[in-house]
Amino acid sequence: MKFLDQAKVYVRSGDGGAGSVSFRREKFIEFGGPDGGDGGRGGDVWIETVAGLNTLIDYRYQQHFKAKTGTHGMGRNRNGAKGADVTLKVPAGTQVFAEDNETLLFDLTHIGERHRIAAGGNGGFGNAYFKSSVNQAPRHANPGLAGEEMTIWLRLKLIADAGLIGLPNAGKSTFLAAVTRARPKIADYPFTTLHPGLGVAKVDDGEFVIADIPGLIEGAHEGVGIGDRFLGHVERTSILLHLVSAMEEDVGQAFRTVHRELEAYGNGLAEKPTIVALSQVDTVQGEEREAKLAELAEASGVRPLALSSVSGEGMTDALRRMRAEIAGLNPPPGPADDAVLRKDEDAAWHDGEDFDRGRDE
Image (cartoon, rainbow, N blue to C red; front, side, top):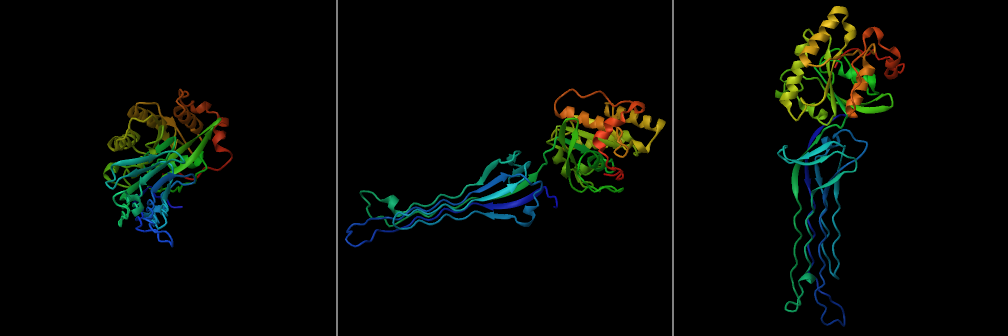
């Protein structure tokens, strides 16, 4: 299934049915009087979150949704039926914006949440409604009111507990594949990831959802590269895991580049709790490794984790730190010294599978 996180949709509610002009005509009934029924109400346009969806791809192929017109009134005081409603089904995390793509109308975050976007027009009164002591034979009825029409934007922001950020080829997709059952595309060139991915990570007796987004580069907030379009998918997360590749020449500059893009994007991303990690540490050894860890610590102001999705080093510590932050608990102590790293703990996420899929986005 292709991923689509934004769609422009035209919706129109149904018009109300017209009222009827009718008189009772029966044998032996001398003064039948008016008996025109009212028109039915037009159908409404609703939006509802449903389970089993994680993309707006359905709205790539259909962008116009119109509810049915209410049935017209008829004689013998028969009122028209209400027009059929139209329901737009979307995944949880969808936001509905007005045509200007800035005014937020609805923010749907829970399965089963339902809102009316456009109300159907009221049906018109039949001539029986206008009967009175001074007008016993009215010969007019009301037409139905027109429905509402509008253009809206649907924008999906994935709902996840933790988000992965970093430059291209920082190892985000490899990390996601190592700790979850997600299978993102992995290769040794930049921007392998073209759309966000989700996976469920398990550690100890708990689990949480991780979102992976395409890599950021300098100027992303101005549209450079893939741009900051996908940053909205980590807005709802409780914590971010910022991965900086050990293969970067200047790991401090790599960290600052991404952090500046988060500040430029706004929406509180730069202030969100963040775990910093030096990824792909299996590619460096000894003094070079220690120097890069120290450089990253100086740039970020926190003690970074040392991670390798290939060898499994530090993975359990990272997952536990993330889960503790998500649960609002005190995070566990920093990563253990490499010499005393417990291999049995890292086996919890490894689970006997071969995670040597390469290092990339």
